[in-house]
Length: 514
Ligand SMILES: [Zn+2]
Image (cartoon, rainbow, N blue to C red; front, side):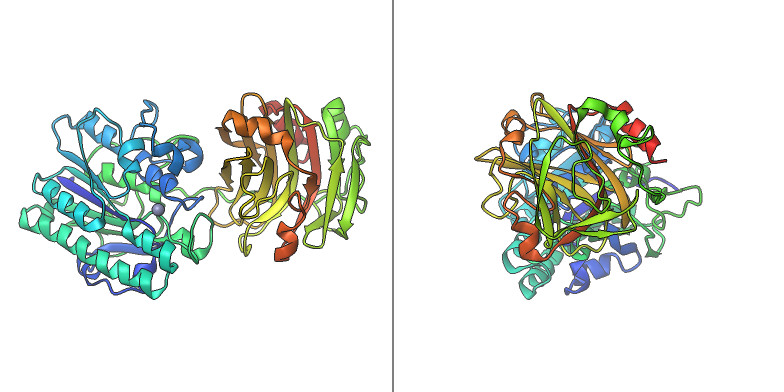
């Protein structure tokens, strides 16, 4: 394929795939002979910075670690993970590149300074479009656009409501004006147009993994685009798609690094391949092994074990160190990973006495994940995730339908870390190992014995980890979150250890479960 001379990415914040339900005469016209899908994926968490960052950096939120807060004030530069702009600049020193956004943090904290990108912003989408038209008159090799008002309407009126859909129609007209500017410049024939949303929404918000949050529209139009359906695409695939269209090399797929790929169904190139994340392996269910047996959990971690809850028809600490008090009734089922499993949540929870949570500690457990969870469930912790109590000191571990989230509070602020399961949908037993350092703030999450996410929380959050209320297994510190929502979940073999985890610790545990 002859490379395109120009590529335009038109990003519509918060549109999800709701354009399917809205009147969009301009998108219909532009993508009539294009390649489209209404089931491309946002990335978890379905939040702006995570996904705009993913598009421009070609990787997952767990790798780039950008958040709405971080990009609003911290200029981005990482030689190991440059943006699409920097990659294009390196190959095309004289090219005119432009980033025109309504949501300014993209131009502050994602697109690098000092690489000759014409950064434009304005206070509403109509004024941004005026800036865009000016950029188009300079025939940009690459133009990146973010229009923000559709997301604002979703938050205000509710996603998918008439007010949200009316705003999509309004912004559709602006997209039409941008397209027509390319036609007027005489370069539309040699331009690849890409249009997508960063995420959708549900009710008045987004961030979770509901169908209407995670699925997004992704369309491509241009002279060589295959008319029809794109088989699969993720927001982060923008980077590879743009590089490919411009005839530039696409970096190798590197787990833990650059993982943007060219979706299939856009370009007529039979050599293109697309790797989907491998399905996760379900553990073999076997009889329980006694805590102190040679192959049991006791000898592996020895004196580091603070609590071992094997969930085998009894709710006692197998290590004999902590005292547990049952509230409600925890139920047992026979089909755990090792022996039985216990069901916690609205019907039963435990308070724990005698835990030491500093200078570091680790929490390891099997949990039965469910891709169709109605909402997030509080697995354990010592703070309350209730609205208004987000900022309370301590932490909570939450199971979501696609990820594990830890929420941290320090008294007057809150933050969180999210580790996605990495497969689009996952239901089944998954092993989670969380390591917390209350001094350095380093937090690590392992999934199925592989390091999946490393982060560093600010000192006030790290210091507050041990300062929550009661330590509860099966609900939040006040035992109201799951109970008031009727949420239940199953867990097996919970371990709480003194000290942080090494990769070797986790690998040794994985071996025990083989
Ligand atoms: Zn957004």
